[in-house]
Image (cartoon, rainbow, N blue to C red; front, side):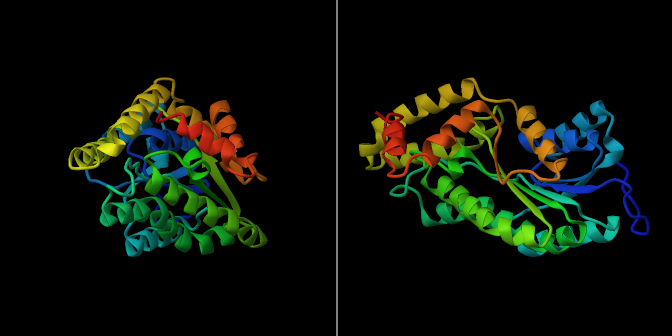
Length: 293
């Protein structure tokens, strides 16, 4: 994979995309390269880049895709990477905060360490990348795109910690939007619904932990949890493909005046709209109660 030398600013606009080993991040990295960007794609673990490298080669964009290692929960590493990208390429035109992790649980059974880890990845990880990126995005008049979730708008059963983190990201970015705009930076949040990625597999450990907790004295949640799992598996059967989300993200990168909030499917728009029209909360809680009954 070719990279520009530190002495030669990139001829293409440069975008940093986090969490690109699979799914939405992978599809976004390849699609952005196809759309004319130089993509700095990050993965967290050594050896987790094979699928991305293959996809880039098949698409014929390997020379425009630069792979870096990054654990977004490390603020020093995040800042160092962002500054090195801007130094190496002479610019940073956009950031796509995509890296994150799912978690299924409930507050009575989750440990505080588990809850804190959800926040570290899904909230502080976004903050760790965004803070050092802002000076470079101000310099380029660039874009900050953050993948949240419909779970950043609508609280969902057995997702208290995950939704809390996504709510926090939405609140941070909604508050940042006018401030960043005054400095010439475009801020957008992208809200997918169910997406056909490894999300369900990745929350398996959380499900096992919850099941163990229920077996160890919290049977009060067992029936509700079983209903939740049945409903969730069904929702992922017809899930949106990652490429559909990536197409939305690349469209935002190419838009000089993108909206602040974008859903990636009609289903996501309908679901988020339920909350945004629900002034007293009864529509949302009435609907989600049906997931576990």
